[in-house]
Image 1: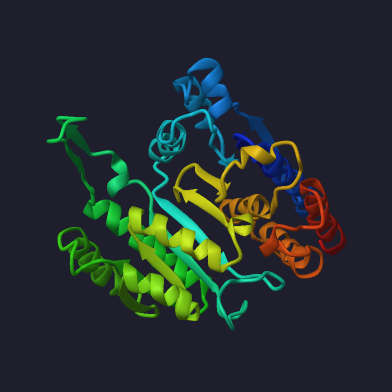
Image 2: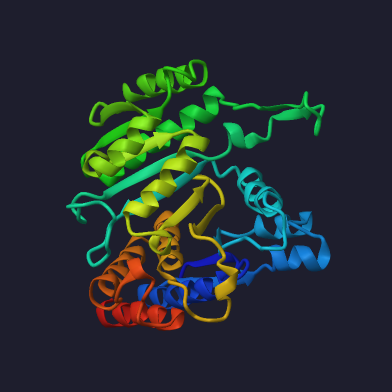
Length: 356
């Protein structure tokens, strides 16, 4: 009997739906060719919906999303909605509700894509960032006292639990072993200043490492990680870190792999519902113009299939994207694809149909 997956689709704002449409196009073709089914349910969430209704993510939609096997998310962001509202009310709410405690960011420079790093190529930039996704500074712990006065005090606390830290670190070790490349895991922290939080991270990292004698372990301060990611990205295989540092270094990593147009990410609950998305923003000024590169969204769809256990289908998507970047697109660094958003999706589909 053919296996079927229920995929919840949140197209998002601006150019988000255009990118998601291409991901769905590719998903449908690869599923048909690899012998499994996909049932998509669409959810109208984002800035437009919020402005029209005042709703962000109502409980009845959360209950519906909970019946899915995965969530496929487009870019969320609207110029008429104050920063923080959509992020906290939709993105963070989804992460916390479904306990998506891993943020996974593959960082891969494809052949044919320019990197701003001199003398670096695809053989130098191929690593993964594992970011803790539900704790740290993003829990919202803290407050404000005497707001809008000269005596105002603002406190934002980083919450790190042994359970949260250990499950993230253990996932990173398992992922490093499964990836089976350099088999090196680097802990990114700031033990010389953030002595309480990263003492917990370092001790837990050292203890868990005893269960993985085949994995080489390493530590670097976050500022050193930023320098080495630019100077020697080939040093990294898998990096594990906390929520805030992971947020920062993953954006730096996106730039060295060629930009947000090919940067995909996943918010993972290994035993539950995970969410997959392109990293870039909604680019509202380009809405409806078919100018946005959809490959990050297509790669996110590939990561989704990998996490769902459809590795063969995921490999077709990755190979299709690699072919398009190597042979078809003109100059991504200059923002020139040479094709429309839909045409880029068609090129990936064409590869899958010819090579499955």
